[in-house]
Image (cartoon, rainbow, N blue to C red; front, side, top):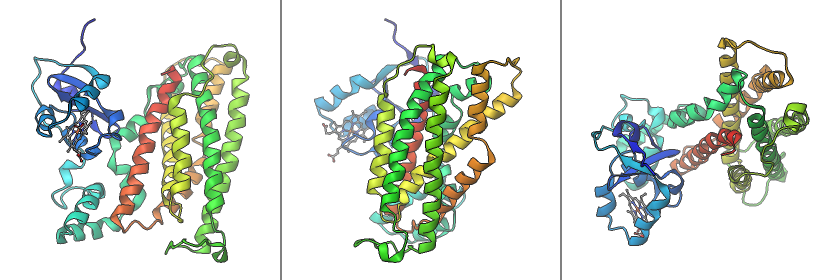
Length: 373
Ligand code: HEM
């Protein structure tokens, strides 16, 4: 079997938490799934990733067990004719001063201010807090956001060239996901104190007001009725001839289970202001809104000759569903709730960033399941 060769130019592009490669002893590893598990933490992997990390790996004196773990992530070898290139990471450019975009520096600040509490970082953080949280989140991993919203599947729906069985596979998984989403809404609603005198012991959220609680309830109620409608819509589509008659795996796939488990867990474990869960809700919706708007713009600029078939009309219905104005208003309302969150504690910010990044990673995988991956 021939070994796949990768040049450093290509390797250097896989430099984020949601898409991370590493070279050790001339072999190329896709270590993305290992980031969560690394006993030495994910930061060192990201710092040493997308390049030759042989020296860093050896310096730590990793055990034979650590070395044995590598095999499962092997994807190829370094092309011997390629030379190392500089890896440019989004936040690397801006860490040393206010020249860059301060919205992107938070994770570094969060980490460093625990350790040292340097004055310049305090000023930095003060400046940063005047920015909207959602703007900041959208700026921390643009590459993954792009992947999550410009997937090949969306392009194929836009050009009406997606195969019916691929659309079916995706719809089946998305219907499973609607079940998880519904449970997430249920958990969030069950934790919401709609009136001051319903707040539980331990609820020390300083930003609590009845008005905000009512706003959260309004958004969650819409989300719940919308997801219920969507589940029924998917069932109705799946019963249509082109889909009922084609073969696709019906079982819930591991990525869907992981997604569903994650959103339920976040809903349970968020603080009393439901901050992490609200970030997750907003992230899922803004990704969908952008993704389907992308499909629609591809569709509008596509030169494909349209036929009036059930499949073509289904593709168009799906594009309409997540690009309509009403959905845009809902995404905006989710955004407003996230922007009201108090993230002045760097540990809180780190936690909000973490759930946002996880949703980005899960969304990228989710589209892939259309192709039974
Ligand atoms: C994909 C590559 C890597 C794998 C599979 C891996 C695996 C492991 C494992 C299994 C351990 C537990 C101790 C041991 O068994 O040796 C460990 C610890 C550690 N690793 Fe890695 N590692 C990788 C890359 C790196 C890199 C590039 C660095 C960069 C400096 C690093 C830094 C550390 C540190 C500092 C610890 C010690 C954590 C502690 O004891 O608190 N690792 N790693």
